[in-house]
Length: 457
Image (cartoon, rainbow, N blue to C red):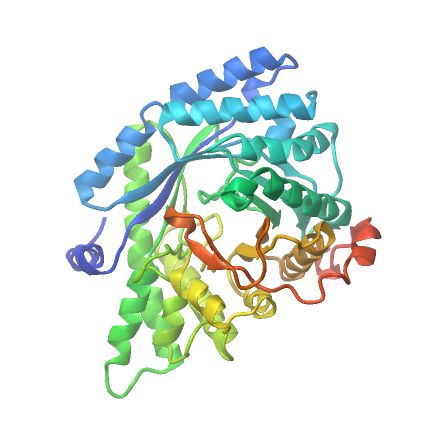
């Protein structure tokens, strides 16, 4: 339970520091829905999601009202669809996506994740069919999100899958040209994807997870910034080590709040509680930005020299504080740096402080990777694949999760603005240097072997 002091601190976070629970995600295994008949599979999926999710949104709202802590998004994550719908063609996979979209709409949730595949070592028939269906599936649905894992520290990087995902992103952007490639915001390519994260677009329910489970994702960049700002007002000013302690204590409080909310929702739904993902998830508004935290450390903006060191300190302190607060930490758990979804990061990119190359360097110490990065519309599929390959290499070598959520905006060039609205925010399209140099490399294909330190048995 929260102590009196923790309750008082939490009330202050709610009043002035934009504390919220960013996502409560219902994970559902759909393997008991398996069928080689599309109509039967669709009916089973609708029935199972309806039975388990009919009270999800109402319950989240009741708990949020009880504690006065907003729950921003309610979501569903299902088993990888490529494994459920293996016998089906790409056109039939699109129909499965529409079934998931309908189920999500009826349940009143914001997103449904799991329309994806795990292909770090190769493709099954279902994997190939699902990936081929992604552009149409995402452009014709409102809630469905897709994640494809193409690399792992254990198995290396499937460069054939990487090449295919570059082409898939291009097609997805083109099919959603009228909305500036918005469907790409629902597509993410992973290395070392976690099986239990509550955040979209990557969420899915992995093997070994319960049949149904509640996972929760917290927020809190505004809370962390205010805590650092208060510490920096003291004299003498704190050292970096002391600021790390401030962040750890703050992450502890935020994590306790997230687990409290998640456990109560799970209890009311008679479901097991899974994990709390303690990632600092920003929003495109003042006071809720990871990017703004860099200014509190004395840097002009994220992207200037010193940024990677600050992000490493921030990510580590968040993990340590959260791990002390809960025995059920999972998902990604660290700091997100999505360009369009974070006001401070977007502003740094627009002002020229944050280049694509520096952003890639930052991803070596953050929780995800090249996230919500808008690129010129004429960026080639091979260049997209090469950018993905670089991110996958960072994840593979460092035994961490990395990802790429790239949006080549049709008809736009570097420096243009793009506006997505809501939590997706706005961004300046980033320049891609030497974009014509990657095609020969990507065409080599095959698999980049896993590093020697993957042999841990």
